[in-house]
Image 1: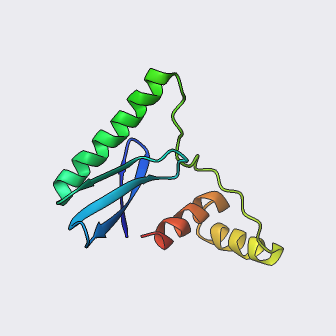
Image 2: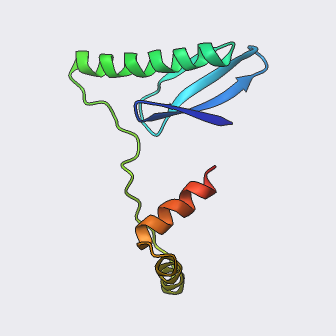
Length: 109
C-alpha cells in the first residue's frame, strides 16, 4: 500500500486485481472519500478531484471539512526512554521535538 498527498490530505492507495485498477481512499478523516483510476496520472487527478469535491461539498452544506492530523502527538513512554531520547537530541544539538520529528520521518519512509 502506498500514499499520495494533496492539500494536506493523504490517500491510501491499493491495486484491485479484480477491477484491474487503482483504488484510493482519503485517510485520516471520518468521512468516506474514495476514488479510482487505471494509471498513476489518472489516479492523481482523481485524488485531486475527490479532495476538491469534498471541500466544495462541505462548503455547500455549511460543514467544516475534517482536517487530517494536526501534527501534535502526545506519547506515553517510560521515563528512561524519555531521558535517553532527550540525551540523544541534546548530543546532536536539537530539541527533543526536532529530534523526534526526524526519527518519525526516517521511520515512515
